[in-house]
Amino acid sequence: MKPRVLIALLAKDFRLHGLPVLLLVGALLAACAAATLFAPSRDAVPGFAFNMNMLAPLLLSEWLIARERAKRSFAWLRSLPVDDRTVVVGKFLYAAVVSVVLWTTSSSLFAPGLWSPWSTGLVLQCSLLVLGALLVSARWRTSWRYAPMAAMGVFAGPILVFLALMGEDAARRAAVVALWKAPYGPPLAAAGLLLAYLATIWWTVRWVERADTCQLVD
Image 1: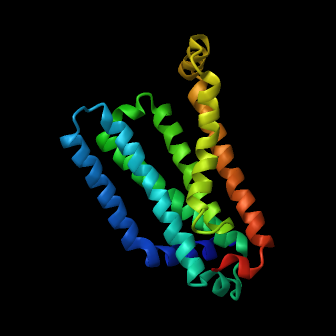
Image 2: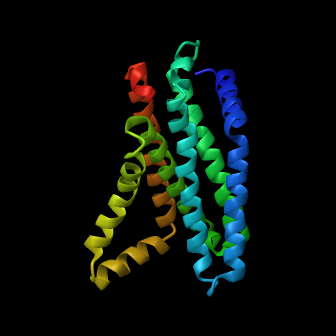
């Protein structure tokens, strides 16, 4: 993977999608500002800010993958001396940069409590990276009709199973709270999420490298 080629691909994506992304970031920040001013309770603002950040990767995957599949851009890229790994990593890197910028800005401005301690904000950022990676991967692997549902199912599935196992058991809930408050709890959670993020990228790279060109376009 050549860094110059990766930078060129990132510059191409910024040219194509830079304005919509900037408008999206501005709109989501404006929505968070409005929630801060008009929400019945300030306690609702952090959750609202996180939900707004979950919307961004959904739209990014549409612009970065679905639209380029429809325009057959990936077939054109395969006619150039550009390896598939660089193309895939460029898409994930672009989505990751937007996610980090948006989450850091929105949470710092409108929900700074999520960074106290700092590890809480880090874990939430890692979860957003995983969601974005799943959406990008699903847009490549499945039909545009089912990609968001597939990604959200994979993302929410372990959480729902965990909550179901917790049930009404107060002892289990207390143990989970104690684990989270332990010094190693949040860093361990962030490390696990980053591992899932990297695994999603690796799995997608492997699939794209083996896929026929017809599988990469609509």
